[in-house]
Length: 505
Image 1 (cartoon, helix red, strand yellow):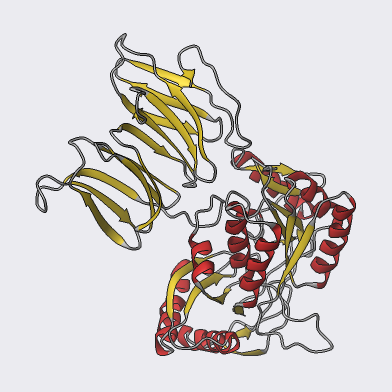
Image 2 (cartoon, one colour; image 1 turned 120 degrees about the vertical axis):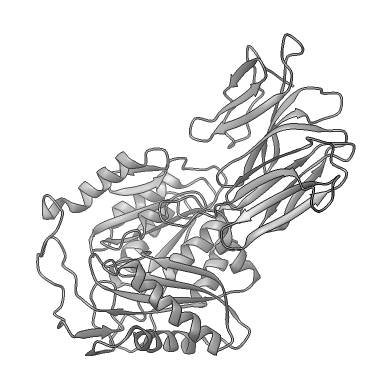
């Protein structure tokens, strides 16, 4: 079979080198032992998430390393579990003192090796817990199997646990919500073709041109049945109905849906399947507020798909929707528009929040002074700063107010919100008795740093403020002059800062 590779035995090493070259600001790659971690790890006081498994399932797991999801992933050789040494090294690299949670797919090698690594880490004084994902309904538990396999549901478990950890939860809290997610997710897949491990060079199994395997595993494990190829609607019915039946959902329940390609399925075919999934959900009177369609957990070049349903409650829904910055999790992009809305209320300043999925949301305040709005968008959130006698800053997500703070008589000239929606900076007269200030906030711990802006000498008002997260450099622009400052990292709490042009107050 044709492969775009060099040495069949060096595919994983070559791929990791490419990953390191392409994403140096987001990821750090260790080659010996092999693991991938967040570039900013370890983070003091934060629960760390570690997962891993055989390579060949990309973007799982390395594609989910980053803020809001995994702190580290351990890639084994193709379709081979990572070693305990890999997992142990990754654990040491990301442990921030609050404990580590392993997310493990239910395969014998993965479970055993993560258990060994857990004992090694505990011997180092690190508190480690594990959650095993076993969501494949194609496998019927018996004395002769290791139980249900961990497949597409792993993506949701990693997202939910990652969001909980990013919010500052304890290890017990992160484990509890991960267990709840694992308990409420089911998956099943179908293969139209086989795949070939590079070092082996031949198909993992044989499948005729007019055949399909229903209930296939992500390593080419046998499914429930082999049968002639059927139309897409029939295939979806065969695997979606058992998923929903096993999950035990009832009319009115909300589910998150993953229509996942196995690596060789065109996106147009996945959306053909998504059409039928929507029809099946409607026939059962189920709501699906969250959809993922694409390649999220694959089997090399295998053609086919898997379907995953996660039963949602309020917390699980919020955690799935929480912002994440990884290579593979979709970003919640938004467009922020500020201006006058003469057609509705001539004296009203209006915010338009444009969400690609939800459309345009309009918000307005009549007491804002002319030119009194500034705002920023990031991580699916919107920061709105309103000048005037009743000045305030407000943070929204999906139209819901998350945080707010009154700033009487404030005049906001510029605002910046980071890509994760968890830190922001403001410039202007943002506090009483301080005519010119710039301030940096962390939404989890409040005000981090303030800088007084020099008076007169041609300085008027701020027209932009920006913080480049990778270098932690804030740039505040003023009419007539630009000033750059280098604030400390958001974590841990920075000391007082001095600068030749800006003086900390």
